[in-house]
Length: 118
Length: 114
Image (cartoon, rainbow over all chains, first blue to last red; front, side, top):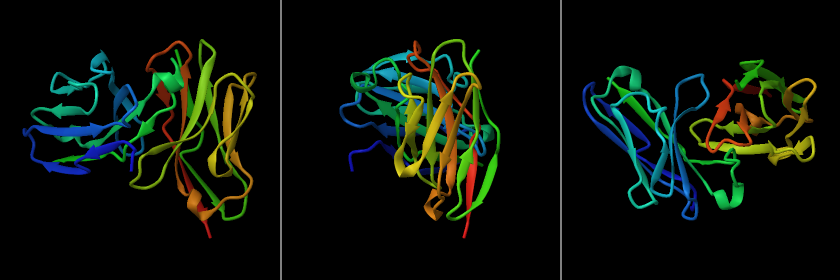
């Protein structure tokens, strides 16, 4: 399967713990996005990378959230000192500017990482 | 400012009958419009997209949508519903000049009755 892969698929943690999610995009895609989705809502944009550069991070929900894509391939999203309100599905998507040009609506999503904070 | 409104949170139809999922948008620019589908415990998948070419857009699984600028609508339709169409559907708008800004609707849950 050469789609977008996310790990772990499910994470249950206690409040105050740190969690990290990993995303492996489609290999030839240079853009990678992180979204958060809560029940009954559409995805909420968090941040995105073009290659290894994080081009937008002002939408990260707080300074407890950080993301990296050190080599322009896989990415990690870390949440420090988790709170119950962080419980959600965290979605990763990738795209290629060579295919979609500046129009980045054509995204390929992973199946998400579901976080439950007790 | 851009926005997307999906007019129904839930739509229930019988198998074999037509499907209509409604979406209205507002945009200051020439928008691109998309429909994504999310099956239970699955990732989001692009169903179809409008990018200023033909106003009637055909997508996967027999779905299509028509861009109507005068009505600022981009409704999703399918002539005959199948049980496998049961899922959540999201209407999305993107500004042509935006590198990342996608505005998502709240979603419409499609329920198929046997």
